[in-house]
Image (cartoon, rainbow, N blue to C red; front, side):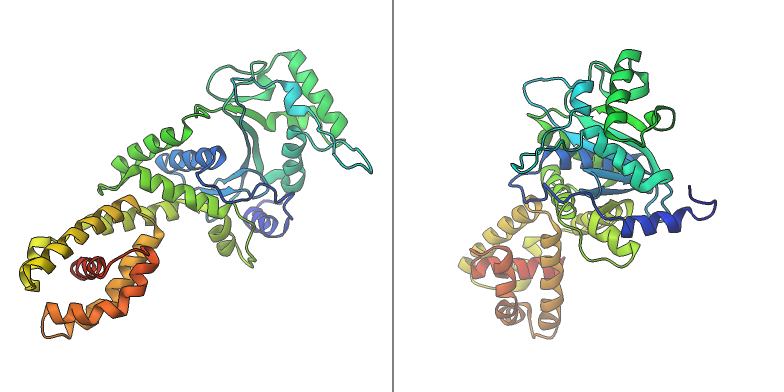
Length: 364
């Protein structure tokens, strides 16, 4: 056990040095997966509760939750698994050991429970809970949504679980270790979890943002940030780099909310820009149509890339337009400077679209 006063340093050292058990399952998705959706829903829950959380994706377990992003003293480890066709879980499923497919030697692999217990062996006193999360219930323990400890199951089910885990893991002791294990029957449905998460984000945005951003777009943004963190761990040398690579934190969400509010705080008026621009009616009409399209794209595609585009365009065009004799000539000078930048965000963008982006970001 760690000595009093040595928690944080020991925990951070462990997180930086304990090798991960496996790196499987870290691939790109055409849509966000159930595991990511559950992780994001946990982030929203912790943020609403006012916690200074840090939630990791695919780091020692499917999801890992630190109690504090700056000075962690404990962590919850979550195995997130799904089942189709309303098939319930059983204690036997949780402790079952699949057989290796190797022809040379067919040996049993670790069970779900065995993998969970391995985190307790690796991190010791740092572990607060080991939780198995699923969209289907474990009737031997609970049929209700929410979290329940394995220790609350019927005595016969507990015996089945303990006997199997003692057989697999020689260091497992019922009195010491059973209390760590929990099952969470989550309310996310496998067929509609994406829309359910959008609904959660909608409520969250109403509470924490004054912007009229698309909840669907912001949900995708959060999911992409979660998926990005589920990729193989980057080379890191300190805790701050580790958090940036693998964790979503309260400060991340807070900053994105501030960026979102800032981005939507002021919407320049096309009518004002048009009066100052002084171009022909035909060009005015073409730019106005692309102005409306850019507004729609920005809302639909709200992301880090969209925010970066706006900031980069603004930084490039402000000096050019400010030093020009008028807005029209400044616009003409700015188009070749940022054309490729805009096209990297929208490859089919016309010069009218580029002009609309320039004018919007200059006035924003």
